[in-house]
Image (cartoon, rainbow, N blue to C red; front, side, top):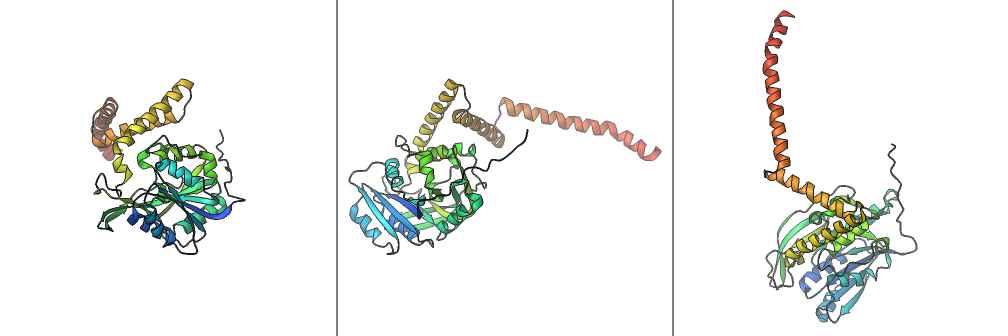
Length: 331
């Protein structure tokens, strides 16, 4: 059998307006919004359009924050009188992407000033036209919002990723790269479609998996984004991360999704995402048991075989020792 890597389809965007559409969703978080706008306005790359989606928040706060946007950056504000939810608000932004690239900048995260410059330069290389998009490495920023200000408590590496995202790895939502690290070509919207509004959480994870089923995503080994956490925020605090508000919901939704995918595979007799995610779970379970020293039939058997092998090697050395002595002095 001859292994041959296909060249892959070129996703280089032609016929679209050059530059980036940045989607920024927000609701009643003016302190965080002002920082996010500063993160976008501070980009060295200037050919962008900022689309702010106000999902039912105070209009005056949004307009006041947008007043700080430099004159050389285009922007628009879409106001919703009543909230439509995070997935639906994101779909509104995806429908307004007119440029070659788009990015999702959550209102509580940040970019390094050269994020867009480096990401676009990477995707513009001829060898990288096969990638529908790219991610960068992130820094986890633990912070607190009090008294109208933001206090950084500590910074730490978030996760590292291989040069190309593996579809099998991305079936684990725990290692899914956050949206702030993504830059995608406009063609990704046509490939993956809109975000699933039936999912209150994990909609971005599910969308990325659908995209990876059709194209590859690269990873730059550079930390160019900040993924911000506020674990001390109260339950009713608008600054609270959604991951904390819906922690139990994440587990429930993911289990329902895996069950649904596995049933589809079993009913059709195929090996699809359901079977693949089941194997990922099995391998993770085995690894966790080995790491934590928990006992199960498989690990017990492997440990027993290892002990027997060690005893045999010890016995063989004991029996061979006299012959080594004789060989040394008589041969």
